[in-house]
Image (cartoon, rainbow, N blue to C red; front, side, top):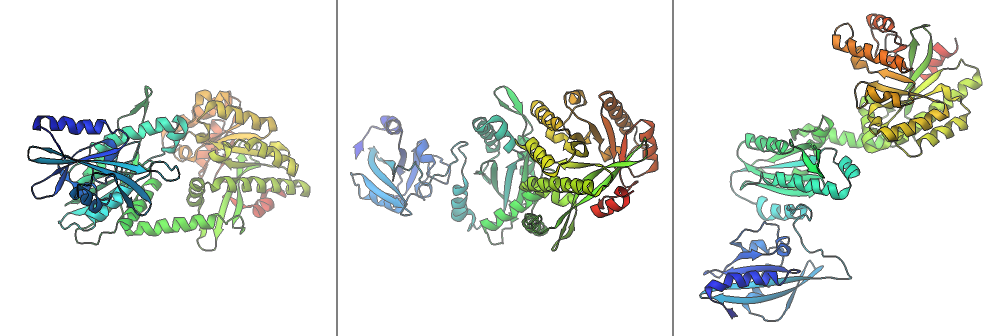
Amino acid sequence: MINFPRMEIENYLRDIIKLNPFDAVVILKQQDDKTYTVELVNSKAAILSPIPFTKGMDAEKFLQCMNWTKILEIIQEEQQDIQYITIDELKSFSIFVEGISSNEEIYYAIIIKYIEHDNNPFSPYTFQEENTGLLNRRALNVRWSEYYRDYKDDKNIALLLIDLDRFKKYNESLGKKKADRMIKQISERFNKLRNETCELFHYNGDEFIFLIRYYIREEVELMANLILDQLKEPFVIDEQEYFVTCSIGISTILSDQSRDLEKLLFQAEQALFYVKKRGRAHYRYYREEMSHAFQNEVLMEAHLRRAIEFNELSIHLQPQIDYDTYEIDSFEALTRWNNPKFGFVPPSQFIPLAESSGLIIQIGDWILEQVCKYQQQWKEKGYRPVRVAVNISPKQFKQENFAEKIKQLLSKYNIDPKYIELEITESSMVNVDETEAILKSLKALGVYVSVDDFGTGYSSLSYLKKYPIDIIKIDQSFISDINRDEKNEAIVKAIIALSQNLGMDVIAEGVEEKSQEIFLKKHCCKKGQGYLYNKPLPVEEIVKQYLLQ
């Protein structure tokens, strides 16, 4: 054992850390009762523990995942040679212990080196997330089993599962490195909220967890609001400001209830799912009925994946009336789903599910093919020609081969392109250059292009003139309040006037009252669509009512 004067011991201990930059170094101090405390650690050692380092903390707790019993044996036997320990029969470490005394104080410098097998990268029991430095999922599991699961005080436990809203778009637009910088900035703000009753974990990618011990529910709600507040100020990456929001699912365990981490996580996920389905950027507590809704949604997605195969999808057509001639020569194709288990599922329920699961591309392709088949059949049977509009999802529209798909369908079914209309949404038009290129490719084929639900999304009237668009469809939310809301009337008149100046036709959606039709005709709207004229009907009914005349 090396002896040092009291004045020099601290410098020597710090020098040991400096001289071993590639190894984990832990400095222990022996107490009078023969227990040991942790006095210093380097960054390599800090990630070996599920508990954040604080000077003077219990050594057994800090090294709980490093086979403390074996380390204690090496210390007590004063073994001077390098020793070896194995964890879970998978990870091997070399341990060297050096005793240091100063007056009556005794320290031990423990130098830990991970032994690689088969050139695998460093992968011991690490408990910090590399980018943020926060405790990770593994640390959460250990902390729960060692501390939360069996603690005896009278406080309740709340788990707050935080998910950054739409963070995937930052990964895609900024790149992984810059997105990681933003995650680190976010974690630094969250870290400011930690206290003696609240722990923070970087759970996974763009997810964080707060574990809170509390007496009254208001303490949890205060923390949830503080978390939301941390994201109100922008994040600056390369001198550019970005704003991020988060959704929070909360699950709780009362002090007298059994403590099951898996159940708590599952319930928080259910609550988070509920939040994201209802607008994001807020928090909700878990309620039992949420689990039923979640299970139904998962089951519904499984059924939707087989809907085309089992012929459960069908197409309905809704007529569009020409206000100049009062004739009907165009329709909008709308999808319907009749499932043996769920019955008739409304589009407002299964279309968002198709969007979020990626099934919308498969379903969208099926609709396009069906419409082309109908057009071919009607032509062969000599029915009068009509144009059919098909809704195109943003994911479909942005496919690299989308225009080529349309070209192949037109050729396969020998269809005149002017009888096919593609309805794109405003959310598809965020990238001006990309949108312009795709639209020009489609227009070169001879199909009609319309913008659906105009006025509700991202597009700007000022740059519509850049796009080769034929038709603007005014969203029904503006039509429903005509004659009752002067602002809506002004918006509708402006859209019609500008569209006419740009050489575009206008179709009003959701026309249900005669007074609405009178207003639209007065201001030269080209067509109207809505229950005033007819509801969406099965194709067979459309043929009987409109195509045989």
